[in-house]
View 1 (cartoon, helix red, strand yellow):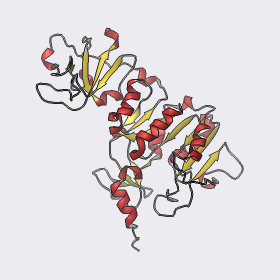
View 2: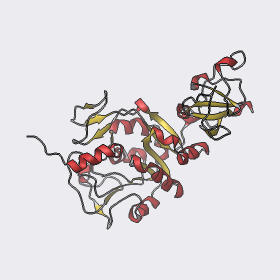
View 3: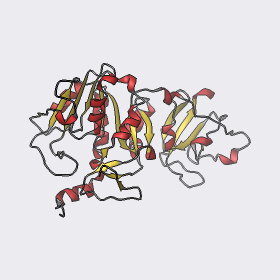
View 4: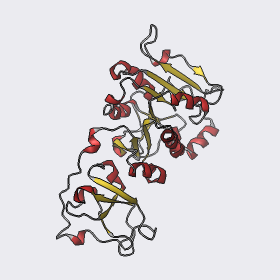
Amino acid sequence: MERKVNHSLLTKAKTNKKDEFYTQLKDIESELKHYKEHFKGKVVYCNCDDARVSNFFKYFFDNFEELGLKKLISACYKNQPHDLFNNIQTENGFYAEYTGKEEGLNDVSDIQLSYFEGDGDFRGMESMELMKQSDIIVTNPPFSLFREFIAQLVEYDKKFLVIGNINAITYKEIFKLIQENKAWLGINLGRGISGFIVPEYYELYGTEARIDTSGNRIVSPNNCLWLTNLDISKRHEDIPLIKTYGGNEDDYPKYDNYDGINVNRTNNIPMDYDGFMGVPITFLHKFNPDQFEIIKFRKGDNEKDLAVNGKCPYFRILIRNKRLQ
């Protein structure tokens, strides 16, 4: 029997695809395993998640005792479907709270929901009150509201681990946090995030789109990252430097509008150059704040894009080696 498609939802999906992604459990497990020491005795809030279907909630529910959590909370906007494949909606937003194993509560399907008076938007006062009670926010926020979502967490001085689009690091608000060492990239990004579950009305686009063995429709955009302010030892590992500037100056042309050299790949950063260097934005995935200082993003002294011989390379981040200062 052919399933009837809700065309208003289809139109919404086409115009706002990035807000329709649901994170796979295996991607959550792959990232969260690096942060386990941060969760002992903490209250975790998944504030864009329906506890009945969210893999974020499922991960923390299943690992509650192992992580030593104090409490788990999730909250959901009213228009969240009951599952990923239908349009059942509630009149109000809702939330769920979990404090450990209880008799008769062995699976997320047993979770009891409580309803907000309002719509459950993460910016609403009811959701914010739950956020204030929490220590760490872990979720997949609406990509179209990513700036606003992160700004709220920073305002309330919350620890967080969230998924966003790679382009988020070019937003001035997000880049400033990275530059000031108030946020950084997590472990996995790009192809390190295997894909997102999408609803039935969603077009399966791209060469890596697929349907898994459980019938989930998967899209792999390969353009997402984890952003966090939870510190881990890996981000303090030095980038190995094997190239030299001396004797290879032609490989590192000077910028027309900034006193620095252009470096086309992170692996080509010279070990002996103590001045300013422009590196690709992918450098941020390997960035060690003990090794390098971030100076500026993209612009030269004239506030125009960095240029070499009148041509602008891809976006560059200006850095300097702290160890040579």
